[in-house]
Length: 344
Image: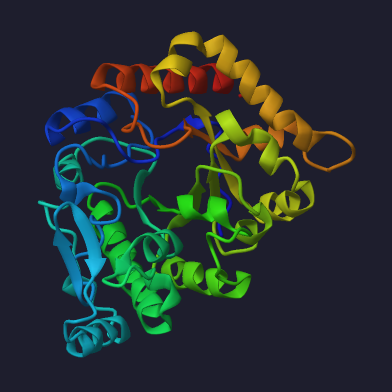
């Protein structure tokens, strides 16, 4: 990776509580002028649910009664052949994300005349999709070797398609794979081996030629993710800062090769937002970073600042209104500005 220093510039994870894509994009471009991200709008339609949004074209996928599943009673052999052919030919146009599944993305792509440092996109990860979506017997798709492989290959094509489209806005792109299910790694809820998970992740990551990251909004085995080919590790630093602090030995080589940390330091629920200020979040961020710079780790505070992004702790949809989402982004931007002024 070529070394990039963002010096605590702000961006976001993905979702907003809006149903109007124009209003959502206006909010993004108002606050995130350096690294805007296209907004996912799950309240607009079920099709923008994070599991459904990237499902177009998956063999046997069935959407009904507000649920998504893979119907194994269907003949999926031909769709699988078509998917593998597109994969082998790198035919990303075969599996686009249409406007009815991602209105925020398609509106975002019309903003082509504004100078930015980079643009950010995101998609669900293969572990999370494969463990959440089941077949009609209730078995997670990830436990079927053929379908799990198909998930990773489809998402690789989707990632490459998103990246190509975002380059119409800026040549510099950042793509995050969202993997909330990784918070169950090591438990009975995720009976996939470390090797299988790494293989699935690397398949999708290989479809991204620009900066690429993984976002997990809970506690996990960070050593697994830090040893993948990601450029950016994104995590919920508001609630789980201490979890990453347990891995200074893995974090240093990641930083030394130019890796970046996206600190999810702004909360995404009404109660916590109401009690926080720029000052309190600055203190919280400092406390989150400090353990990595102590006890001979070889990591300096200034290095951490240079190789950092700031984000909300996760998406801004579940517990927020449009007004409170705007407040979260305002806190984020003001915190970023304060950190960059202090440590420039």
